[in-house]
Length: 133
Image (tube, rainbow, N blue to C red):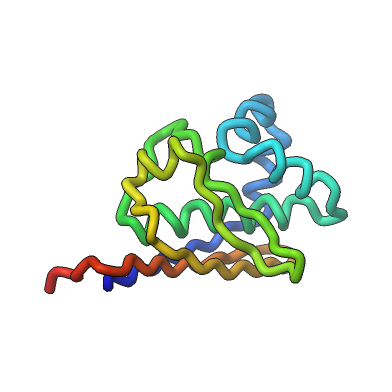
């Protein structure tokens, strides 16, 4: 079994600046799925929710030891919510292939946000793979 962990912290004001900037919609479409945009836009503190989802996507990349490329599409890494409110990561088929994520991999996500910052941590468990020491 291989266990990978990633964490990321995002300043909410920076996310608000990026979204309200002149190429804000291009940024939103590149980074967030349609469902994520609809969810965040429905919230009173929408920039906190956007920041938390961005942190989750970055945490996934960090766990996998992948350096994000400039203008990389992250919309295929989607943050959803179970009926209980628990967040989860959903990968599109293209993202799963690009990230080389095995089908049996399990991902656990935790996010939090409050006024100035949003944070996310991801744990990925890949059964049947030995970690090299």
